[in-house]
Length: 333
Ligand code: TRP
Ligand code: SF4
Image (cartoon, rainbow, N blue to C red; front, side, top):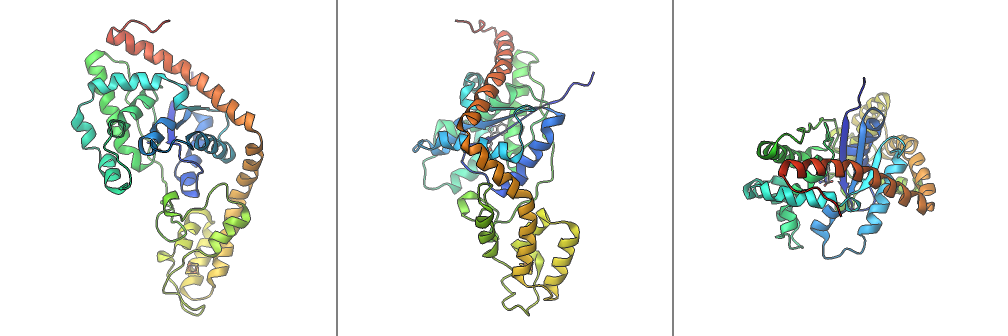
């Protein structure tokens, strides 16, 4: 029998997605959904770890993100789309894991140290922020997946998940398979100003940008700063426009543009127009689908509710095994 491998991944809800998120995760998810028993969820509790002071938009963020997922091609007939906070088992397993997770494992987590240093405007010396990866371990292990496809930035968290799973299995018996992280090529996408594309840098093209908005952004993008006049040759390697060509254009175009840039045979506006053609081809259909989905509020709600119900069944089964292994009485009311 050909049993599909279970795959699980999630995103912290932070609102609309940009092309970097799309290339970094979504494309991959869409590809996996038909060949795997796939679960994708919105980590809305995780979003509170850094945004606990202003929670007014958390609900909208969840919705907006699911709209983007559906527009990009995730299909609730093929995969399970759910919301963390609708499956309270995540919180229960988090508490149990918190009992067996040594504090130094959390304190040496590179993401923890990084974010504490970078997000200077908020007080992140909280219990929830330190415990972020413990909740993530619960998210993952509740579904006993073989695979957790994530970007490199999440690898320390999944490694910690494996350590928690091993420790649990060692203490109470084999309940959790140790999940793998398939490493997929995810090009780091440059943003409009040449830095990495990121919502917080204000340099992103969003899936919800209209074709006109998208072109306005591309048209005014930073280019090779040495190429001042049309007759100056440029260097595609230092130009973020070329960085986007590498992600989205076909090989012939990439070759022609790079050559034209180095010999001053092509102007920057033409170069950007050619890029925009490829962006249009890929993202205008997503934009149009998005418009339809946004108009249908009930549909998005329905996807989240149905998916969360399916997820909760799996979560409850795992939790029953956990309780059994730990000699905690089964959960009944
Ligand atoms: N930490 C992830 C992010 O920042 C979100 C996340 C939470 C997650 N739990 C997860 C990802 C479990 C994969 C598996 O986007
Ligand atoms: Fe960048 Fe293209 Fe201009 Fe070269 S021609 S500097 S690659 S925009």
